[in-house]
Image 1 (tube, rainbow, N blue to C red):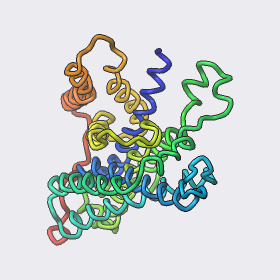
Image 2 (cartoon, rainbow, N blue to C red; image 1 turned 45 degrees about the horizontal axis):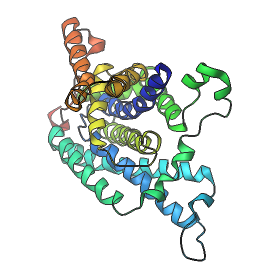
Image 3 (cartoon, one colour; image 1 turned 180 degrees about the horizontal axis):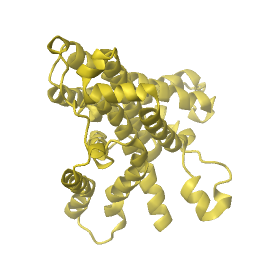
Length: 328
């Protein structure tokens, strides 16, 4: 049971990791995108829609006109198309956010909340236009583990029994962490988030970096929605995804804006989120309270980091503040 609990925590935790990695990248540029829940919803819906369209084309119908989903061809396309579509839909959400906050200089908090509402509505409309079996069939490819995992006992179960999205989440988080800490692009991005006026004076384009960081960050977060539907729910989208987006934002604070810490933090969040399912004799109301544990832990971390008041634990100084070049 312990191994099953850890495996389940890792799988749901990687959904949070996608969202937190994308939001961390965005916030490092000075953008506070509270629209991540909506972005994740659109990412999930876009990926499911692409899978449904591919299924309609690839499935060979019977003489009676009914589709035979067991004859779906090319598993590579069945995985790649939803991933690309998920990123594309989420990036569009990032473009909308950047246009409103960078070009039109709208309030970032209000824009983010509006984007969440918009994204949830768009996702509900998209997913209502397709049948579950049209995109649910692809989950067999998303959840396929390494063939020798079962032969390695508990080690294979804990480390090698996951689908492609789990390993992709970890790879992206470590890559983003490396880029932010050890590359010139990361240095410029952090400068834009800390002091955009100084970065602008040094020749760094604040507008370009904020647009790109928000778009790429949204694309990464969108994969979290697709991961939840394809890996965790096995293609059965019947739960609310936007709640996971808020946990992803909370994870950014918990990890003090460091994506590599998010790898472990996301597993902890996943464990706290599903803990109520493994505790017997707990009422439905108390299970809902237990699901609040990740938020409680985040608050405690926020209190501790505020007391310590270390510079490396603080959010970017320009976070949530629009940049007016003419005031430089």
